[in-house]
Image (tube, rainbow, N blue to C red; front, side, top):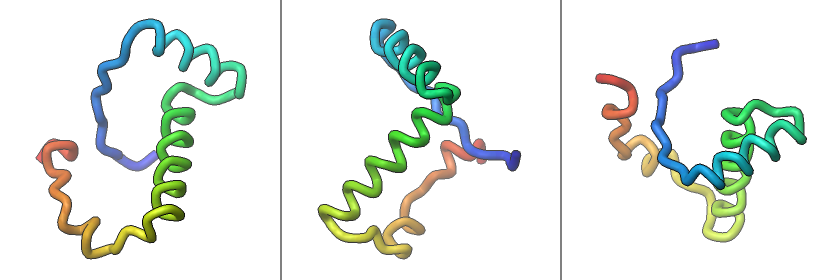
Length: 68
């Protein structure tokens, strides 16, 4: 697995328990389940609002998440 950025997430305990329950029931790790949800949300956004331009993505500073 390549080195990927990490993102800390603050989540209410009840929601965390629900996430753990659902991810286990669907045979995913919590991380993979969250990634699936995020991908689905981005796909929904792009269907509704249009594809996000590569130039707009490149303009976003992610350095604080890359440990640089």
